[in-house]
Each structure stands twice: as structure tokens, then as C-alpha cells.
Image 1 (cartoon, one colour):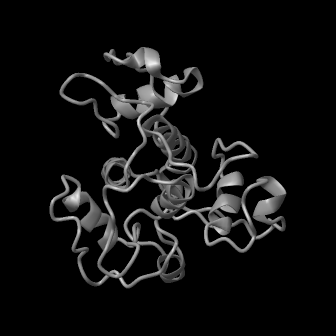
Image 2 (tube, rainbow, N blue to C red):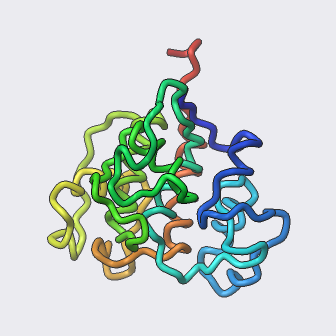
Length: 220
């Protein structure tokens, strides 16, 4: 079954899931994030087992986030797991995802978790800011029990550059405070998102979900 676990992933998940596709010990701090504005967010996510580096001490914060890394990151955030009844592999769903790829399990999970991924998705393609935000909010709404609220759309300078089908999720991300505008009131939807920027959005999601926990069975 799918389950949400924000603060602590299971031991098996922490060992097997990583942002970069490798399982490196998370005990030591990354040495290449000290210059990054996202260093605190990255450190928190590392401590929770949500992100891993490309090596034991390297995160490459300024590198572009690939689609495979973005999908894995969201899966890690929400602690999503495969349903026991799922029997098809990644290549049955996605033409460009090989069964032996490190990210194949994450794509199977994504397919069965309500992600909005095309069957021809390229795992190595850099994600844009709007693409990552869209997938993040969709997953949070499905598995994080986000409240259904009426929102007043946020006006920003480059809202005309949004992909039409992403407008709703981007607006909800802004209203909930998970995504932010820059000092010029721009979102930069088409810009390729870096690993550091994705970490900040993910950290904001962790903070939001921690402050708005899903109702327990007793409280429903």
C-alpha cells in the first residue's frame, strides 16, 4: 500500500532511494553546498534521508535536475511505495525507461501514484521549474491530504509563460507558499530547475505537510 511518511522514511527506503540514483552514506555534510542559498534546505533533507548526493560528500547543487531525479525526489519526499499488486515493469508504461535503470522503480511508483508523466518521457531530460512544481503538487494533493480550498489567483509578471495545463498546480503551489516568486514577481516557469532549487521546493513541501498533518483515522 501507499503511505505517507514525512519525517522518517523506512530504513529500506532510505537505503534504496536517492535523488541522484546512488546510495551514499548521509552521515557527512556535502562539501559543495556551502556557497548555495539552499544549503540549509539540503542539509535538512539529507538528514531525513530524502536526498542523497552524487558521492558521499558531493551534491552538485547547481546542476540541472533531470526528470528521473525529480521523480525520485518526490517519491522519496512522500515515502511512496509500490503496491503489492503491481506486476508490470517500467518499460510497460514508459518507452524510454529501461528496466535495469536505477530510477525504474520510481517511475513504476509514479505511474501508479497519479503523476502526470507522458509515456514517452525522457528520464535524462532536465526538468523545468513548472514541470517539477506541477508533479510535486499533484503528488502532494493525492498522497499528502492537502485541503481542497478556493484560492485567489496570484498575479505575477510572467504568468503568461505558464503551460496552460500547469496553471492550477502552479497557482496552488504559490498560494500554499511551497513555491515563491523572485524579487521581480516572476516565477520563471520555463527555466530549467537546479538540484538546489528543487531541494528548496521539497523542503517547503516538508514544512507545509508537517504543519498540516493528514487526519488520523480516529479524527476523520
